[in-house]
Amino acid sequence: MTSSKRSQHSSRSGSSKDGKAANGKAASSWSVDEFDVAPEEGKTRFHDLDLHPTLMHGIAEIGFEYCSPIQAQILPHTLQGHDAIGKAQTGTGKTAAFLITIFDDLLKHPHEGERFLGEPRALVIAPTRELVMQIAADAEDLGKHTGLNTCTLIGGMDYQKQLNQLGREVVDLVVATPGRLIDFTGRRDLVLDQVEVLVLDEADRMLDMGFIPQVKRIVRQTPHKDYRQTLLFSATFTQDIINLSQQWTTDAITIEIEPDHVATDSVDQRIYLASSEERFRILVNLLRSDDASSVIVFANRRDQVRRLFERLRKASITCGMLSGEIAQAKRTKTLDQFKKGEISVLVATDVAGRGIHVDGVTHVVNYNLPEDPEDYVHRIGRTGRAGASGTSISFASEDDAFLLPDLEALLGEPVVCEHPPAELLSR
Ligand code: AMP
Image 1 (cartoon, rainbow, N blue to C red):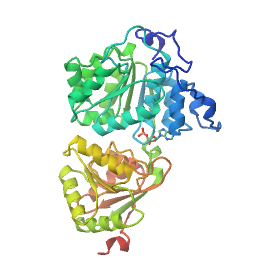
Image 2: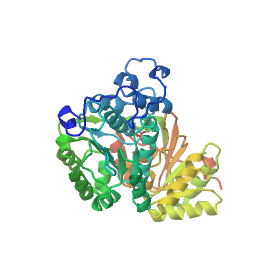
Image 3: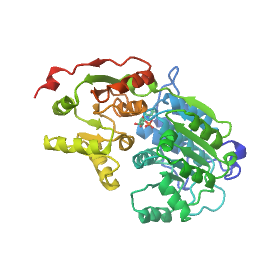
Image 4: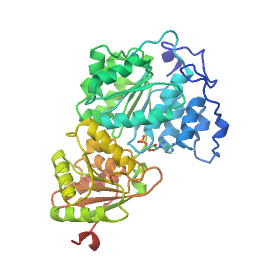
C-alpha cells in the first residue's frame, strides 16, 4: 500500500527486515545465502525483489527460483503498495503473486499497538471452497517461517470449528468464500476494519456465481480503498469486471497474462470426433492404458458427473467424484486421495474442478465440451503444470461440436479434430 494508505494502520518505523518472524519469535538461523539462484537474462529472481527473509525461506523450501511472468510484472508494483488488476487464470502463479505481496507487507509493516481476535490484516475472497483451501495451503507453505497466521472460512464446514480457530490466536490472513464470510461478519465474529490488503480472486467467477452483492457488502466493511491495498484477479475482463475494478481500486496498474501463456503450450490438445455412444468406450480404454496414471474427467453437469462415475465404477475403474452435490468433507477426502495417488481418476464439474491443483496429472478428458470456452482453458490447465507436459482429450460429439467455433475464437487458432486411434475404440 502507498505510504499514505499504510499510515492508517501500521507503523513504518518498525521495519523488521531483521529476520524476526511476525510473532516476535526469532526466525530460524536460515540465511538467504543458502538459496542460490543464478541471475539469468530476462528472468526475475525472488532475490531481486528485496523480500523479507522469512518469506524467502518459504520460497526457497517450495523451490520457486524465478518469478512467473505475472509475478515478474506485478510484484514490483504491489510490493510498493500499489493496487493492481490482473487478468490471469489459474496456472500462471497468481496465487503466489498475491500471497507474497500480503506477507511481505505484513512483515515489513508490523501492526502498531494491541491486536484483537478476529481482526485480520489481510483478506482473500475466492469463489469456491476448493480454491480457498488451495490458497490457504499455498499460504501455509509460503508463510511457513513468517509466524503469520492464516485462517480459512468456508461454507459447508462446521461454523463452530472455524470460530474456535479464530478464537485461539490473532489471525493475520483470512481466506474465505463470500457466503461464509458474511455469516462471520454478520455475527461480528470477524471484523474487517483492520484489513490492509484485500484480494478478490477469480472475480469473473464470483460474478457468474451471483456472489457480487455479497462481495460488495464485504468490501464495504473493509477500510476505504484509499486506506487499503486492493488486488483483483479475473480470467476475463468484461465491462462488469472493469466497472467493479474501478469501484474498488485506486490508480491500479493492470497486468494481462493472455490465456496462451497459461498451460496450453505444455498440453498436447486432442479433439476426438466420437459419437456420444463411443465416448464411454474410448474413455475406459484410455483409463486402462498405462500412461494414463492421473486423469481428471470433466462433464458439464452434476448429473452427468454422477452417471459417469457410476458407469466407470461398474467397469471396475476406481474413481472419485467432485461436484457441488458431494458433501465438502467427502470432496476434501477425495481430492486428498487423488493427490496421494490412491485414486487415479477424478470425475468433476467445472466449479469443483477449479480447485484441483495437483501436479502430475497426465490427462484431462472433456467428456463434454464446456459451454463457456474459458472453462476449456481452465480444464486443460489442470495438466501440463509445473514444467511437466500433459495431454487433453476432448470429445466433439454430435451434441457439442457446435461449440468448437467459439473455442477456436478464444484460442485464436483452428482446432483440429481427429478420429480416435483404433486401440481406444477396441472393445
Ligand atoms: P496458480 O496460478 O496460483 O494456480 O499457480 C500455478 C502453479 O504454479 C502452482 O502449482 C504453483 O505452485 C506454481 N508456481 C507459482 N509460482 C511459481 C514460480 N515462481 N516458479 C515455479 N512454480 C510456480
